[in-house]
Length: 479
Image (cartoon, rainbow, N blue to C red):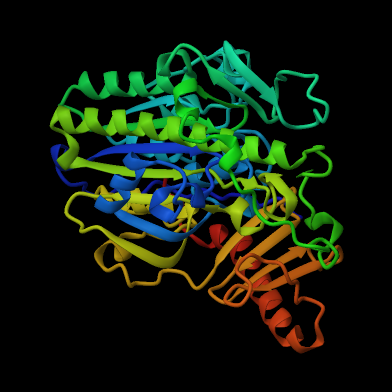
């Protein structure tokens, strides 16, 4: 794929509204959060009262999609406002090296326009658990922030009862570091963990904020990303014995390409039924712990008297497989991996639910629009303000995502999910009827009857790739 060259024209200016009228912005990003793990999205097992309340007070987007179901490229995409395919940012970076120093990130735009901008923990990419253990900045973008704070925590080394449920068939290994499913029922309460520290720091920043400048506060919560570590009390409501894993469908993989089998599976992770139960229970406990921190932050905002002039966004960088198709973790373009929770509560707008397709790349233009800034024409997302004004508005006909180094593509329409492996489908295709087969068990891509639909989806994909790769060159540059 050819590298996209950026051309820059002189900066254009405009008359901004009075500074004091700008709203504060509170952006909360969870890590590896499956949309269906929240009560607001229909989960009847996990208790997430704080996020659920926010959803009831704001706009809940039912069909929100990540542009790359891996932390680094997803965050680089929505924080800089480009599709990964446009900048070829597919790795564990901030994205700055591909976008360039002259292009403002989302928080940097606010910083350069009179905002106090602060990052607490993981916003751009950080390695979890490694950067969290060391308190590193990870792959942060320092130009984006007035101040930034890390939240070091013990992660998988936390004191407490631990179990490794991945590649540990005989149970000989208690715990293991890295990107694996170690579960720890931790001693020491919320403030003994990174997310508890993050929540406390966010509260301090809200309480101590000086009113002469509006704030852009970005709060990164690392749970439920592995390891599944939470204070032990959060596990009480999720005894693993009561967890029912997703069904195992016979011959589920036989009609999908080899590249469509996720990198972590029940088989290669050597997981039995009990391992699956424990992994899901650990994930749910981690979600409940994360939700509790969201609640503390939102209560502090209310108590500060600033909530009526604060835009609140809650989302995740991508989803997470919990045994569907015998898949675990992220990376795949199946629904559980690429679909995300997305909630916006904006002053002056009524709550509601939207079924329009939206993408995380839409976050940047939406926050500018809501804050009274002109939207730079270079941004590849769309403002979602029309949906906040009328929840029945449709801003997109489909969602577009990529994975596996940008060589695997998803086009998701209301009726169809089309996944293509390779630029010319040389490594296979998948086509699912999302009305008849929402759990994506029957691949129709090679059925003669559905070839017209395959061709239509391929045409949509080719048009989208061309648009994403070329439209930036045709638009006037403004930071």
